[in-house]
Length: 253
Image 1 (cartoon, helix red, strand yellow):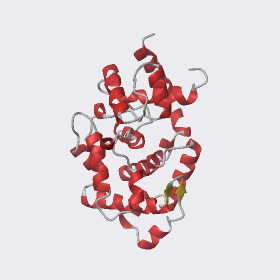
Image 2 (tube, rainbow, N blue to C red; image 1 turned 90 degrees about the vertical axis):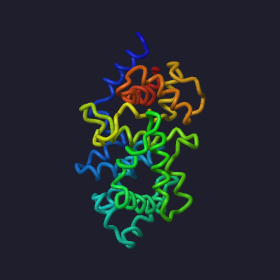
Image 3 (cartoon, helix red, strand yellow; image 1 turned 45 degrees about the vertical axis):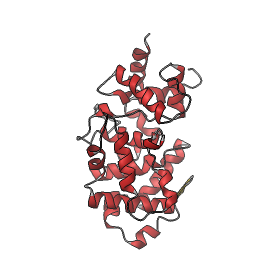
């Protein structure tokens, strides 16, 4: 069987609502309003490293601290409201990072018309890498804690930007399978990049899709080229296959 056909089968296997239950994407699925989905998705993806149960648990805690009303909290919070976030911690992401994220998001919604606007207006070379770079620049153009900058990656500095590429997949992909939201109509899914991590990277190398050893920006570009040759309209659907094989079939693969 050709690798493309094999991966298409795996996409069908994993790209369905049963995938949601044990994946961080279940958090934005708790909401209906566009802005709530965006904010909960961005915050969840931003702490999406480590044990998935811990990611989901701590993402739920984030939403509770935002009164399960994330957009309203972002726009209308008081200084006292922010102080209530300071005890939050997920690995190296702490309460000071959390409050910075909230104030930066308010800046973006108040002054730039929201996250989608920034990403859609900064596309270059048929990729979203420049959009991510500009998003980070705008995110931290207000007063900020220096330590928090490490929690928003930048492909222009060599990062694979796994978490933010995952967030973008959630917001942009449209396939009616019930997993990704597809609520950002202004951006074509063909520009998406695979959220490359240790699981998808290892599988991609075993299948001969990439040769580069590091899971960095250059590896993402290498993988983009192959996945776009498989499906130029929806290349990042193969994230389901690579991740699913790596996480759920590691003893059989």
